[in-house]
Amino acid sequence: MTEDTAVYAGPQRVLSGVQPSGALHLGNYLGALIKFSRLQHEIPTFIFVADLHAITAWQEPALLAAQTREIAAAYLASGLDPKVAAIFPQSQVRAHAELAWIFNCVARLGWLDRMTQFKEKSGKHKERSSVGLYTYPVLQAADILAYKATQVPVGEDQRQHLELTRDIAAKFNHDYDRPGFFPLPEPMTQGPGARIMSLRDGSAKMSKSDPSDYSRINLTDDADAIAQKVRKARTDPEPLPETLDELAKRPEADNLVGIFAALSGRTKADVLAEFAGKGFGTFKPALADLAVASLGPVTAAMRGFMDDPAQIDAILKDGAERASPIAEATLAEVKKIVGFIGA
Image (cartoon, rainbow, N blue to C red; front, side, top):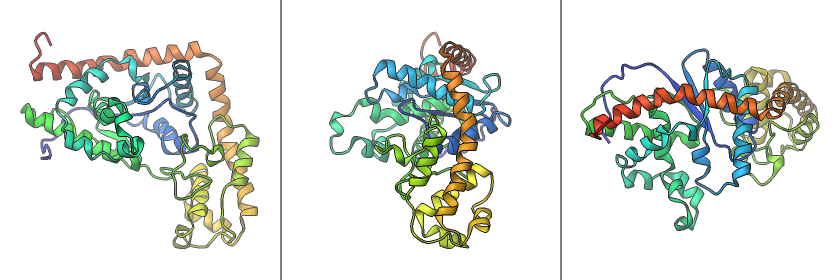
């Protein structure tokens, strides 16, 4: 795929979203939510609840609605200001789905066949998977390019999809002779807390789909649950090392030190300087206290928002009304370029 070398001259924007398909956890909070709250003051920010993506697998309708509000509550509790950032459900901005169809006609089957997430999620029975799951990355491209987003916070598991977005943007620009029309969005450096691992397996990412609730700290967990999960987190029998090189060889220890560092706004080296040579009998209680102190206010704020679903719905409706004109303007340009009459 040939890159579009023209320089995009439009405004800088950030876009990201989270699926409403399970409880948010510490990894989501440290890897995404608190970073969204910082970014909103640095660059125009669009944060959506990815409810269209969620239905690529069956969702019970009432639960989907409840989880959409829960994701929005987590955004708000983590510091996103709906007067600053546009916070909205993906399904309330119709341009996402319409632009995705146009991009389905730009993307190539060979590109989608290489997407590893589809292979992982469909397993040995891909013929039983929805078409939506297969074309999921094309909808992601539409999510991003509807706002001509220039920067996208992504984890390692989504980098391949962002590369596909760049390919779709470059091919559209080339095929319709519109160099620089769509930007080629860049991944944002995640920094500390970008990849929080399971409390039961230091080699696996913390996930809301893990069958063990003890593998993660949910944002809705109370203080007792958080402390118990930290106490039961898998570790090894050795005291904490003095160097980062030694720590890197011990995945469970490395994960817990990384969580401590991210929650306290410190580096792993700083944490080791304080706890090197001490056992987990000392370190885990300190981590539990820190986690409870850090997440307690977020949990309380989330519950407050969730107790008022009408307020959440009003915030999401307002966010969609702010996001829609931007996405619709992009779609109108695209339809005219493609040759649709009346665009």
